[in-house]
Image (tube, rainbow, N blue to C red; front, side, top):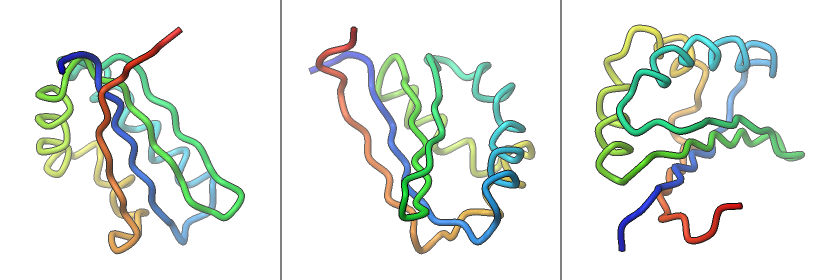
Length: 98
């Protein structure tokens, strides 16, 4: 099965919401320039878990971005706010999008 892919990353942070939002915004320009990028949404659950959702054209685009973000300077501030032990990452093929 091929098609658009939804990347879902759940994580905790000891930083306040505004700090996470600010650091996440620093990534926008880089993300928008990645091959296959469609959109991104950052959410916060009631239990304090952040959910970062990104839609990609395909799995290859998602995987390349996931690999290269680790060395991207504009991602440093965001990555430093994430509790690495809490990260749960999923990729799923989008079956329906309206």
